[in-house]
Image (cartoon, rainbow, N blue to C red):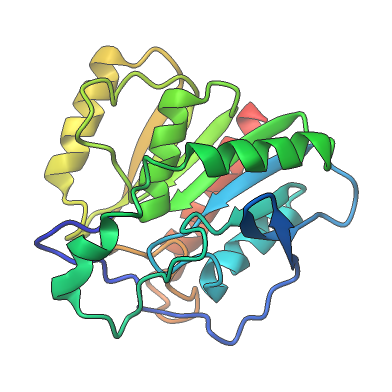
Length: 245
């Protein structure tokens, strides 16, 4: 997630022409984007958006990709109707905007989605995937929801909790080598802490020459040199979920 010094440059590579294959539904008190695979499935992934919110075409594109690989994908509005950040917003107001949108204060919404998936979709295995703000949220879920079987945190770290290395479920952490939002120094601290304190499967992977947002916010056809890294990261995401689900 963005920090005070380096605001999140997640507005690069927008897939604004993408419409999505799923539908918007009401899940208790929150709106959500839900897309299901062509054949039935008892596996689902909670897709957690970045600061630009649940309607962003890029994020729905990733949800659709998960559905194409056999998962029910649900992307809830974790801001619960509050305005997401906008590329035109005043970055000097970013921390103020964040105050009531903490990625670690989402339990009520998570519980509603879990009920929906189990009671209305017949799901038995649930994973999570999140980007930037959502990557922090995935880390939070792995610390608090052991029955969420696997997580993929993409450029997101919880730093303020002493127990942030004590994962309860497997997590793949994906980072970019040239990410000014989550610098390599923070990634190194995470790696060391997980090595010392984490007893479940985990992996930290750093993609060379990439910058923040590359997995979901950069079109794979923008730059030929980026394409292999984008596709590899997405493949890693799917392989991790498949391994534990």
